[in-house]
Image (cartoon, rainbow, N blue to C red; front, side, top):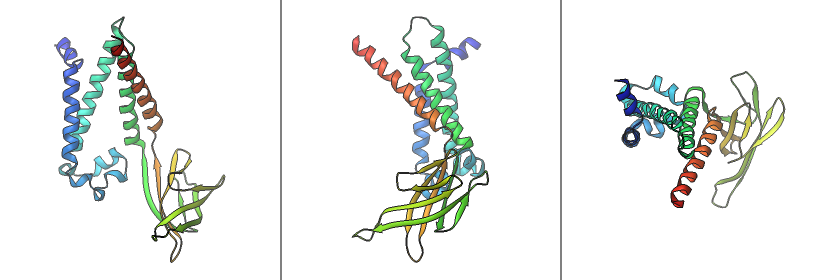
Length: 225
């Protein structure tokens, strides 16, 4: 019985079926109102959203998470099985390890992540969960020929001094990223800020790097053959 279960868990076919299940559930979810901008899925950590969304609204995502969970077990068992077999290339080990780290990284962000948007005028402030305040010292920008705002920035004052944020140039503080998304200068200077915390970002980067190295090694070995 245990050998049969172990054999199924190390099956490549199981991994392929599970990946197909992930793609199918995500494809179905793309037609769901939960995946729309008004659904709120992108406004908070995944597990936080799943706990509050009705099952009729989030069933496809639960199925996707279930497929990924079994796929994680499949990859973990395959990783252990590959380590037990001597003489095999290190490439499959790296690919399995990279995938496991990527899944772990998403779990970390889904559980401990933070995301919030706020529109604040110049002179207002917002706070981090630890109580530290961030003051919007100054909001500036330029209006282009077509009337669109360009070259805008916001100067933020924290306990350690003054820092600037611009489009694609966020400021990171204690694991939080502060982004400025939009600016309006009249009737008073106002900026739309987004605050992010992704605790799994570094783990995801390391996992992706290891997975890529494993793939390149495997391709090089097959090309040599």
